[in-house]
Amino acid sequence: MATRKTSEPFWWLLFAAGGMVAALLVPVHLLVHGLAVPLGWTSISHARMLALAGHPLVKLYLFALIALPLYHWAHRFRFILEDLGLRGLRTPIAILCYGAAVLGTVATLWVLWQI
Amino acid sequence: MTEETMTLEVTRYRPGHDREPRTQSFTVPYRTDWVVLDALNHIKDRIDGTLSYRWSCRMGVCGSCGMMVNGVPKLTCAAFLRDYRPGPIRVEPLANFPVIRDLVIALDDFMEKLRRVKPWIIRAVEKPVSDGEYLQTPAQLDAYKQFSMCINCMLCYAACPVYGLEPAFLGPAAIALAYRYNLDSRDEGYRLREPVLSEAVGVWECTFVGECSVVCPKGVDPAAAIQRSKLAGATDWLLSMIMPWAGRR
Ligand code: SF4
Ligand code: FES
Image 1: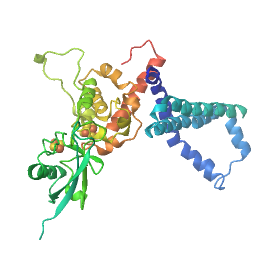
Image 2: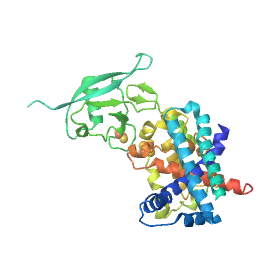
Image 3: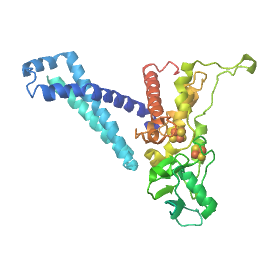
């Protein structure tokens, strides 16, 4: 119990930040990279995008854009499972959910590193 | 013309006597201006005097007549029969609480939680009465007014699935009340309430279901109080991480 008491605000802050990103920024990218470019409404060459993604500030932005929503998902999904009545498994569920988000974060770092 | 009637399916239960709750049907006259509480009073006066339930003001103020009406927590003095035509109407004790008898539930857990959040104005130093009142501007009143409208009807606890699963959860109304005093410009008790709110079974237990605010008859919006208390708690936590030497507010 004691550890839950101290770690909850940390995960909640990541959840809140991830929620902001997911609500405000992700739709923009879905529109641009999910619709506008593939449907040919606008064209950005792969080389240009790659060059853009290589900039350190853009990398930082991409990192926040990709990693933070993972924690939003993890927190939400953990609570959904708990609300479904799996409260006996709280600790393993928390480890699994946040663990997945941490893995995703590491993967994001790795991919961004490669660019 | 025969008189129009409506059927109420009422939960009856005497712990210690009955093995389990049972449902009893009563037929009552239908009146457009009758609420479920009127129908219960009719049953108690004319049909079965042993039916037990709580009520007092009959006007949505005392908060004592909360029951499950067709599975939804309602003030029975504000639930009109006409909205449940043609019926039958299922009347059960508030969910998530132990039953004392029939529709009467035990309040002890809620009362204990209310006391724990110290829902009164706390001053570091109380000024003498001769110094006059603590004055407040309309804006300072508006800051907490909504959260002060709570009538302790506990509908929000009956609606909260988290409270149903984790009875230790401080719960919507108690958190809303704590928040109400934290927002009061006359109050200085934030530090004293904070440990209760920031417990694992305090605000952090909430999983943003939001049903509390849906069923609240007074527009208190306890869900907002909980989320904003989380933000305050998380900010406190962050500050304590960045500046462990600084005393938190
Ligand atoms: S917050 Fe609303 S639903 Fe909850 S006890 Fe107060 S008035 Fe009732
Ligand atoms: S009887 Fe008082 S609120 Fe319903």
